[in-house]
Length: 446
Image 1 (cartoon, helix red, strand yellow):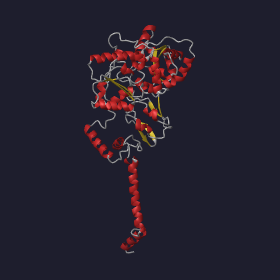
Image 2 (cartoon, helix red, strand yellow):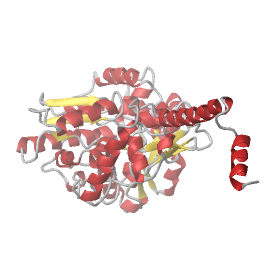
Image 3 (tube, one colour):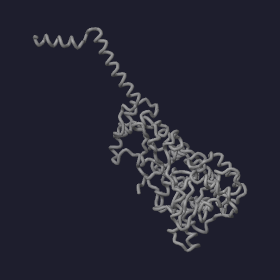
Image 4 (cartoon, one colour):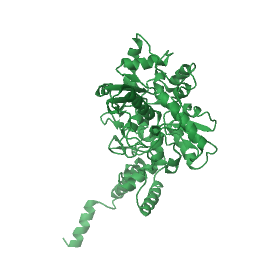
């Protein structure tokens, strides 16, 4: 499968080439050519920003249908803790979990349970002090992919632990297989996802060769059906086995707070994430043990698949956590193998100009020279997010210099000026086509 598979797609029919998306893409993966947006798959990290800002709903994300669960003998739902914040007047998490079973799942394994295990594993790793600090959370796949393509020097700082979604799927399948005596292959684990990046993380995981999650169902896809099921429950089952730490992962700062350590930084929103990574790369951030970064504003509650305002959902979760224990899940001894990455995070040089260093330097100089010819307004009218990105496109042969409306305007002015000068000369009788022909006749002796 393509290493750069992405779940975010474009509906060409709805796209009007308005350039809103190109200005917000953190990896400059989008261009507008011939009046339509184009997504470069090698650069896309599935952050969903283009979905969020497109006024014409031309950007969308693929996800799995709930009907897919019928392909398995035993079906396990893996609800993200952000799901709980989508419902009004919810005072018991078990209502949501029981509702999921009413939709056809045989079992519900909370991702917040696995989050508490990841928090404890992170505490152990920090205490050992063997890795470069600060450690960067690996929970948000957008951040991990952003670092991989744009911040290669920070790859060694990323925590080599699977996200709670992956850990939950692995543990849930193992427990169900041992308890029921059925093969793991017949057990399906489905994540109820708040964002498209998790869909990509399942299809093309980082750190492991294959995901244990069998599908991702969008919160928005399941919300109406789940709401109806919750309203018609005859009995509420006591299913929940997670505490404040696990549920807290749904919003920004929750993962870091679960470390019980005040030497941390938490940032959310893709622009803020990039700013933190840039300062970290420049070694302007010091004295921290851990950095939690969430691409979506507010954390996972701000995912594009969520139906509720991120900050309203966060407030609801604070109310739900009030009567929960601190944590209900703990590691028995060492960190289990299913929680750890099997492969190191490697730089994916999709943004570099050339494999040949000399050629790359030459192209960089040409880009800088061409960029000085542009107005520096970063207006996006050329179809690129900035003048520098447009200059790069021109040098790569992907665009023409005249695609810049300011360059085109100057060229039109020059042509108009030339035509005007010729018109003035004609009016003054200095040059006329007839006069020119008469002069030629005299020279011919006719």
